[in-house]
Length: 311
Image 1: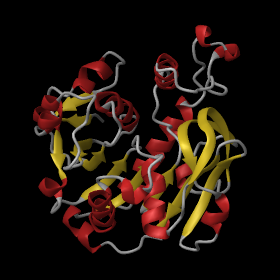
Image 2: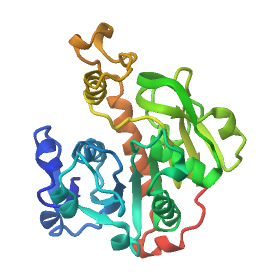
Image 3: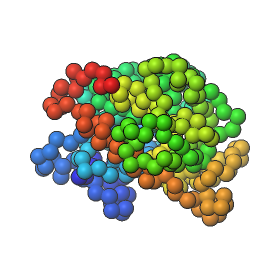
Image 4: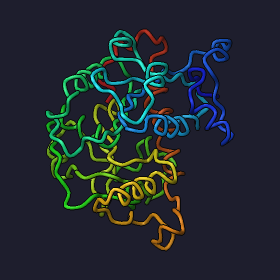
């Protein structure tokens, strides 16, 4: 089934070229199917790129999905046209009374700041709290994962001596959970961050569970409330050239940056990347939608407000 997207969203034409079936809201309204409602709080600087990356992964399911995009009220992005934000993004006040089947909160380029120093910290933590009662399952990615674990469970983050940058091998601690259905024993995930959370801090908190980690890049996936909250420290949604674009950007700026680990063929930027994470990324998002969003959503959508702990 297709994704139900607002007409003229740039991602529609980009993904049609990849033979991904997307549908604008006018055509979708003609079908007598109640789609899953997913809201994406997009904090990444390149909004259109992130929209396309996430929509690409959400499309790999037989479920029909209606996607809304949310923005932070007190923040004006520098790398996305204001007209795009005005046309396709809603502020929290516009959806605060709504209920959603799923929510995705992306990373943000503020990870080296203390959480409380982020200008929109109060607004975003209010959204975190709202999601607990208005969303069936929320997927927190990269900085959002660190922020959510800190806000709800007082898990600290730590600065790294050098950027965690590349594609790293991961293992599963809880292989029989639905989120890992179809996963291999080892899988790869891109990471791009200057801070980390540590397993010893996760293991101290009985309300959360460490599900996956890497010997090189550390904690990867943490779950709370039986899947109502899933925290992921990497960027499984990245397209093949995202790490390359970040590497070239930093080199051109003269910033200290190493070649991303396990990314380029023969570790040579001139030979291009080897994509090792696409299969895992598709499974991750499909499993999340199928087992933590769709199967947990009440038969009557308005009953979501009565959801308790699904663990």
